[in-house]
Length: 183
Image (tube, rainbow, N blue to C red; front, side, top):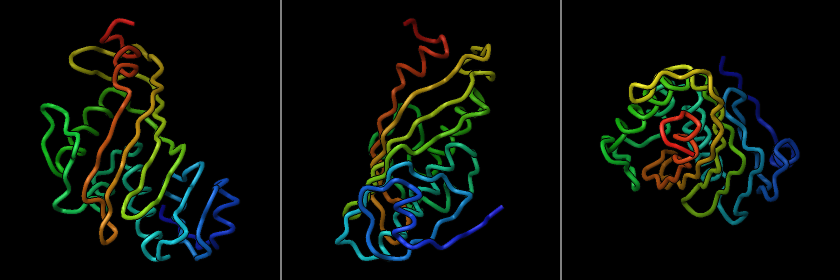
């Protein structure tokens, strides 16, 4: 379902509990994750703000759905992972591979956006991942353990697509919850 609603910035601010949103119309796609708090640099052009928020929400939603078309739509063809983990391919292929592994381990994974900050050509998202380890990870079979950890991403966005990403996940907590690393 791809329901789209156009809200005024004031209505969006009230709906999201935003601290600062420019006085412009912002298109809201109800099928994409909504940030709990949205902070926007008021000096940015309205179209840029809308494009950046849309790209970030599309990519953040991808982590819940695993829908490769969402990642491909959000990421520029020359996307660069600036904090590339060992063994992960560079470019769009990297997040697609990571999502497959993650969804195989935690099929019911859900990513909420606690905060989204839009400033210049950057969007910072504070993500909160939840789910249950019922799949497999590195040969370990899950037993339904709760997964609950955070991540922070910094996206550089140009022409409505993410060109670069710097990210930090709380992998220690995640691996401890899976039982792969001792607490």
